[in-house]
Image (cartoon, rainbow, N blue to C red; front, side, top):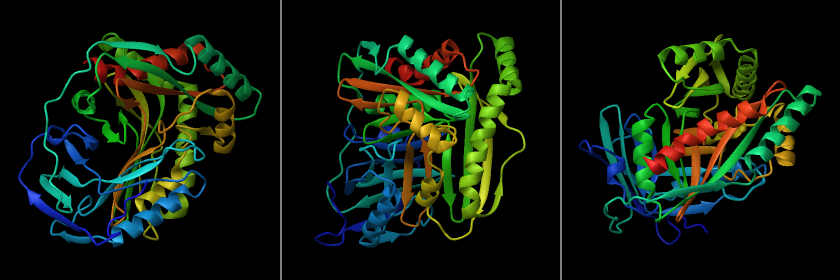
Length: 409
């Protein structure tokens, strides 16, 4: 269902500077919260001024861009702040698979934001806004198998590694899901607060029931400048400082993980080069150390040539080798054949875009889909020809811990 701004009359959009609101997440009401937060900065939203289910298919990003252009053009905007994220803003989540249903764009009725010492509030229309209510806890959490049991998933990993050794492809990323059931309905705000506090380096997000804290910035557009952070190659944190350092060194020296990272960088470079007048990718990755895992990471920067919006860049980049594989088309085919589950929004693009085409989009990792008392948790691992199924299962379990912490505290 779509509710377009201005379908009966143009609705007013007003952005005003506000004092420091403190915790952005603390301002959210219970129903339909939207969020994109890192180090306490970002945007939160609530209510719905407009919402649309994006039709699946290869042209879904073009369709979404055209819908947004129509909706944004129909708004009467009073914006004295004039910075990325002011005026009307759409939050979005796209499914990993272009043929899957479930992609959505939402323009919240209210958006509260803070960046670089400046805070602002955007409101659409004159409907009274919802007020904050006390956050509730989910009670006891139990877990059950998702689409596959652990042994079944290990068997799929072994199949994928064999197909890689046979030369069908270089790498494929396989996802796994886990079902969590709570004693009481799950308050998304509780999860967001815990994620943002424990994983400040990550982007804590909430869009239409998809909740998580992703370490991977797919793309940030500010004017013509773009940034991305490529992650591929992972190891769990150590049991003590010496073990932690040793694990990081082993990850950095790992032939398997370095090759996996090189595949991911190559796919980003291939996607961005046609859109950019300049593009810089580092010669060597760095270590990104998070509370639960360490990643090989490479920051990428560039300058767009033709004024493409952030959503155009998302369309060019998704899926990257970091969440799909190499070659991408073959990897997607293998995922559809053997993964045994619907990823929904997991590993798909999630983020926000404003009326000027600026915005930030991440890859929906370390995430889950909340519905009532249940959460479907997701994790994924990059599979190479020499991947060990038991080790990959352990890596997936380490990645599940992000959302398990959000649920259990």
